[in-house]
Image 1: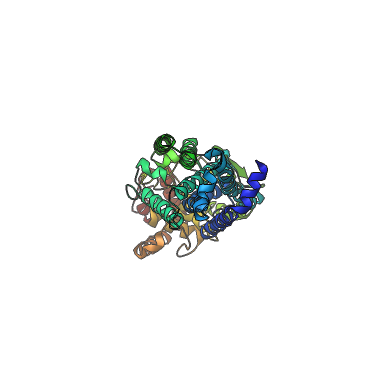
Image 2: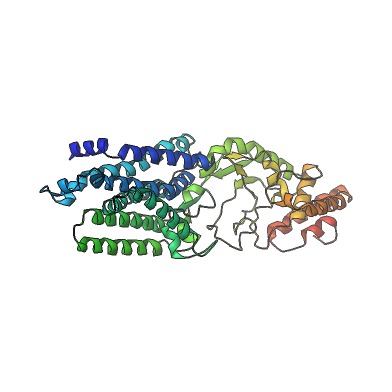
Length: 451
């Protein structure tokens, strides 16, 4: 069998298919930006989602192989041999199928060298995700081979690729944005995780595995079957597998992803005050700690300032239209602890990290459900920074010039008060924000409301 596999690898289109898969995988990662450089979870998602393009290529590659006998006018000669059809086709099926599947795994391992060098957290499900893609690619090759054997036209390879692409796009759009149809699970273009500590759930991995097994079983039976019975069985097997793959993963984002406690485990820098980030972002701890401590020094102008800082972590998976995500989900800071966000861009912390922490006197990530007082938050932050406005705060306020005008008015009213009164007002505004009391924080800063 080894010798036959070697012959098939040399004579079939396996090498061409491997090169196409590698090229498409590289293009997919390059076009996705730098999100995958430092985190295994992001790499796993992007590599898994690349099946959206890789599966059509696998189908086309299998169809090219399926056309070989009729294209070379050897179909009757080969059929006249005494070997069973399944035995004759097995070396080709294994050669091209395994070549495609192993390419997917090897490429993931090669790309994983980059996040591995950063010491990024790697959860088990993130490492298992590529295995489901391997099954899908093997099944795609075999199903394409069956199509090529059924119809030897040169139009078959591009046709099956285009149909697979259109089918996935259609399935991913069922129900519109935020739709919850189970049919969306049959598209290999899945919704991405919202945060780096959201890992794929086992039930979603099971769904992808069943989808791959259904493709593989159906492709094998359709390729090797000589009568109507195995072909009917193939359709039945794919129907059952696809139905299970659509239902088992669930329909909500909270069904597809889960909070990975290991990824959220805090890793702390040496020195005081203590600064901690999540394990999945440990690679930026050394860069973040000085800026966070600088922000804590600024916040220390107020009485009762925090003595410890920890990166904000979600206590639930972000779902489409979740009303609790107005301000950091429902995660509340611990007493004496400053919650902050790293404001990552291309896996690097923002140059305005201090401003993003100081805004709202350190209360932006307070987890209150009633929302965020942008005007009061920016006014308090600008007062603490000794500036007229905060630049680079990642809260979308730059899109509302009228709010910036209100900030200037509130800041002027605050600074018109005696110094000790200014400190009292900002501290009162901070306490109101942390308590989620719903008090008018702008009125507190302007002196129009009591603390």
